[in-house]
Length: 415
Ligand code: HGY
Ligand code: MN
Ligand code: MN
Ligand code: MN
Picture 1: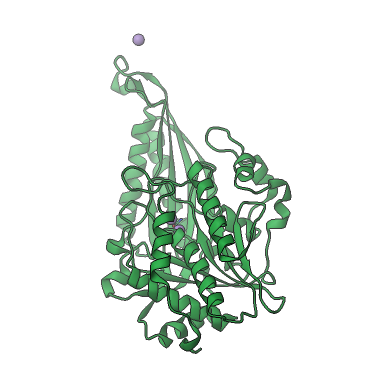
Picture 2: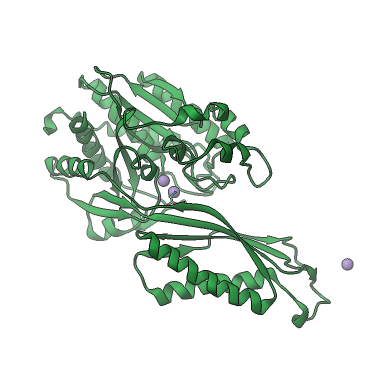
């Protein structure tokens, strides 16, 4: 595919922009707190749009708040889109999301500066609300583009304080009334590429600078609310208690025990959120709400693991005199990446003699939804120490540089 046509990576420019973007939503501990709907989310949007305009892209915000920046092509065809998301988990890191967005802009700008005559439009995208958020709607932007969310569901959605989703989408420059216009097809997006940090240690352990993603795991999430009986902490005897927190605690440990017993590399589960209600020192917790997340490459296994958990929860609830309700939050199927795009990425890496490893992703990504309707591929760079969703998230500029060459060469090959 000819590495001669690929321009040089502007390391200094990229690092300067990355450092500047990383200040948005930074906490005093150096973490990034930029959840969807926050002021930092809005500041990040304004920053990205300003940069994209400076670069000369034609910038727009769609009805769900996704930001697009397009360099027109010579013929009217679907765009080659590179991007990711700019929101973060609470107290997360600098790389998860923004690396792929800023690289999208970098690749397009570099190709443009080199005089590359792109046939297809080249575009970057920054998707709205990829991470779990107070609206309990992760990958909101990419799911909307893929037609995987209904207008009715979004009109009814609120955050935990009752703020309507409509309001947050408006603030982001979107418009839920125009939701139908968000949908894209393979005619609009000819190919999609996403750069992301690996968020694991497989590349680092093998000392390989580039991962090429073959597929993305399925993710299943429920919110579980256990209801016991609130009562006085001093006067209620042990045998009279129906403690929703203790019942939940036993359930959470049952999940861990089950993971150990299953001993299946392809199944993992996490309880990452727990709310004790009313959360006061002298009240026996009457309610306890928590998230159960299960991931795997094979949904049949994910569902059987869930069923095994529920069986254990039933026994614990009955024994402790507690009830519980379940609410489905996400049932996202595994998604293979497009074989021909993976091939293009293989060739791009080979052209530059960059060692690579094919990987399945156990993290979720916007690419999972985009791949449901058009050709998509992902590139990973190593995460130092495998750390992610925490402030220690870090990747090396040398690896990011390799990713630039792979993505730029792949964009040319797909054009
Ligand atoms: O949760 C995930 O896997 C992703 O980082 N949003
Ligand atoms: Mn993430
Ligand atoms: Mn991410
Ligand atoms: Mn009292």
